[in-house]
Image (cartoon, rainbow, N blue to C red):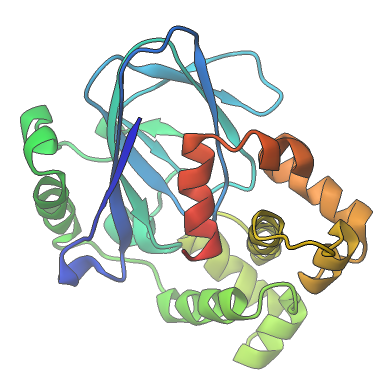
Length: 266
């Protein structure tokens, strides 16, 4: 399985964190991977045999091809039976709303957001250029809702102080009310500031687990990343990944690793 990342055009650096491509031949057995929540919306195009996507706790599969996946606090399970080739966009937390103000809160086909799309051949040959052109054209004339600067500042504050802030402390530092902060997050990101804080704290704990040194207990790591205790960390970890921390560490697969690097800032 091959993973590649591509940088966006400089005009899109506040909108797109990176582009990515995943290519893999058919495997002898069905492949299942965890798509971990990281506080970012994504768009993905399928250039080969489409797989399926399952929400945590659901047994109803959805075709995982040419889809917009909004920001969520819950994981997806990706299922692939044949060869795969996906190309996609990982937005900044507020980036999708810059392109499509009023983005939906549930996964939707890309065609429901954009009447135009990059061709399959362009995505295969030069994905970064194809996606740059597509997004820049989509943003022309877009009237984004109010509150972007507030959300950008809040997200950066949270990301720099993971595990040490609450919604009230963020609102106080930014001199805004809690309702104002909630409205801005729901409009621009699609989840509440409380959920975003939870996702980022989970990410910090995940990073600490992967970098765990001899003598580092799970309880110590939980406390260092802002959890009340190890049990609290374990509950949140299962919520965001659908598995225990031990199972995640032991079975870290390609997609999970790709998303984990984003969460840890690597």
